[in-house]
Image 1 (cartoon, helix red, strand yellow):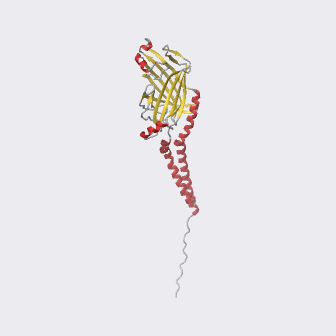
Image 2 (cartoon, one colour; image 1 turned 135 degrees about the vertical axis):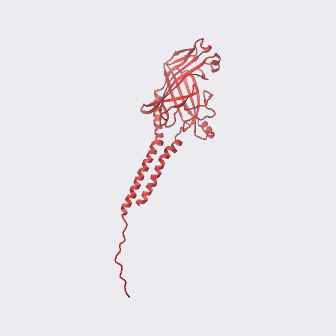
Image 3 (cartoon, helix red, strand yellow; image 1 turned 180 degrees about the vertical axis):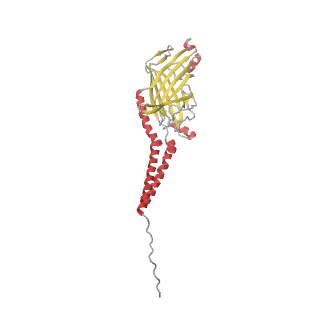
Length: 332
């Protein structure tokens, strides 16, 4: 019986030991992915920024500017693209809606972001756009890959429509969560006017006729939880200007917006809680289960060997044959 139990334990030991690397290197890359129907939103604010008044074409201080960012998974679009892409694809319909302290719209910029559900690499397909303009993204946007590394990444800037490095600046602790801090600087760059403007009659085409151009620069900061690759907090120090042309009445430039944009406190708390829960799920596939299976396999192997040795001791040495005196021949 000991030998049979030992063989059964040995079989389970081999199974769980083999499952350890399979869970980490085979199952995880296939099971860990962004769901196509995911929806999330965030509210950011700039306190006491400078904002243009398009009526007077002058820049003035206001109480605050609010930016509402929404990301909505488009399941139908992702399923359609998956047919030709031959991989799991996520389509996010994003919207940045900006309003002043009185709740009046400043601008709104829609995006369609298409990416690989596992690696977060961009997938180029019909519909990929920013503010209705077709784009071909390079690098990441909104989210880092699972198991983010301590290195620089290429990050797509939607306003400038360019990809620039976002630099790893160190490891920190944010609200009890270990995070990687990344920073990107976009130098002054000429950018398109938003298609939706706050004043009727002002359109990108009408502005182009005046010869006035729009310029933009920002310092972008993200604190990223490395296991999930999800930012738990973000800031931007951003400036926008109008330059040249007849619209400015002889002035060289006018500030459109200048302010320090930060995530609102209530959204920080909800984001941190969400990332903490997702972190446990990723760790199950990358750490808890692989190491648990390995430990269980080694324990079962040790138990199997112990039972085998115990069975041998119980049986002891076999009986030895003894030889007695040979019988004497009988004479008939």
